[in-house]
Image (cartoon, rainbow, N blue to C red; front, side, top):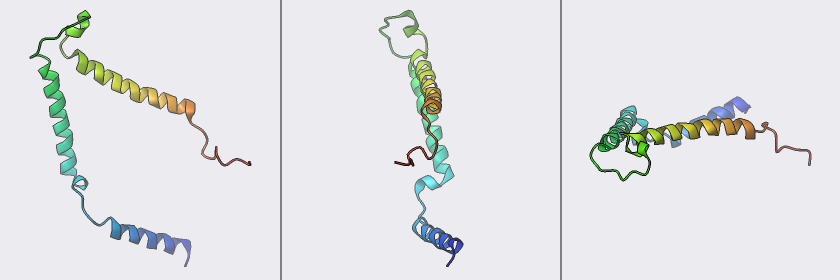
Length: 99
């Protein structure tokens, strides 16, 4: 048996194991989750109109300040992680030393 036949046999084995359909396999359910998340975010953003804020700084009272601040900081974390990856990344065989 050559390597290609073995690979095909392994693929067939995985197909048998993964033949069960899960609820997240359906793209409609993924879209429902995303639209629900959008609705929750919009609702929380609009809820900012209906409660009194005890502000410390003047910008704390701006409409949607914490939602916008949270979004900007989340994007900043992702971009910072991408930059940090460049600094910390090692070549693929880094731990395959001659020791």
